[in-house]
Image 1 (cartoon, rainbow, N blue to C red):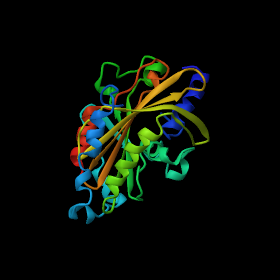
Image 2: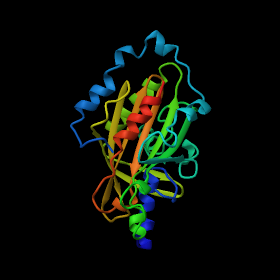
Image 3: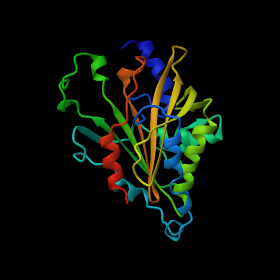
Length: 261
């Protein structure tokens, strides 16, 4: 991989709010009708007594709900602490309404809460035919999914989902983002088909300017189950610049959502 290409990857890293360490949706783009149904299917119940009494889980409790090693066949699970931003203050956009989108791609809570936990779920190349990378490009040819969990009081989770859904529309024309000393430009945001899991889900694709050399598309999905929200963002270094998009593994989403309370 050329050194200049690695530098241009900084733009993609900034968009996903990851460091310069190793840097979806579930399906093709749609007209957003399916996502709208998912976004709104619990609107009427958002003020129910159960939701009003919801208590946020602590970060320690969320850590226990994250996927652990051995729970998803064909994937390795590691801590995301070394590759993900520590707080929202490290992720800055030029449009406040786009903040929830940027936070979701960084495995940070898309809503107003301090209860947050994250990790990384990557393909286990030892279980594939390419267990021994042939070159550096092959070594980067791994889908890595950054998973974030956050928990909310009352109807905070529903409000967070609404903020993400509203952000997809408000930021359709793109937005600027800065993180880790890197500036980046998202040129387009569009709703895509989500998994439909949990109580509601929102999925979106972001086109990113790759340092003036075309664009790359990145996918994110946000799923709510009760008062807990899971975010999923998948990237593959080797796919950058090829026109291909790394898809969020359905097995990872299904397994993670199944662990939520």
